[in-house]
Image (cartoon, rainbow, N blue to C red; front, side, top):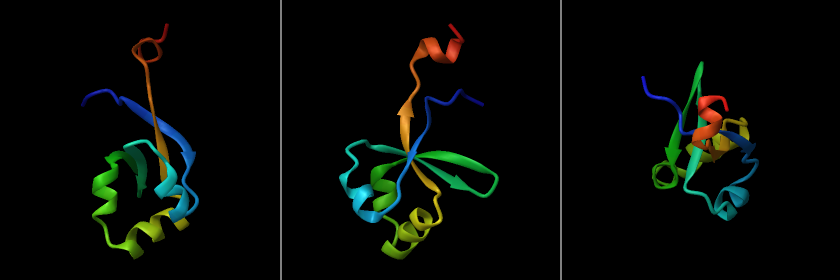
Length: 73
């Protein structure tokens, strides 16, 4: 399995905040784990599905990890 390039950032708390966020990646929690997902994939969901995930606190900004942090230096 490959190393993660993004880590979980601030939570997205509303649809308006989702629209205003200028990043293209989000971290989404699914059950026991989480996945980094592209903005267009989330936009392709039905509105109610995306809103449900946001309302449940499962959508976060994705923060890019730089290489030095991943190597532990």
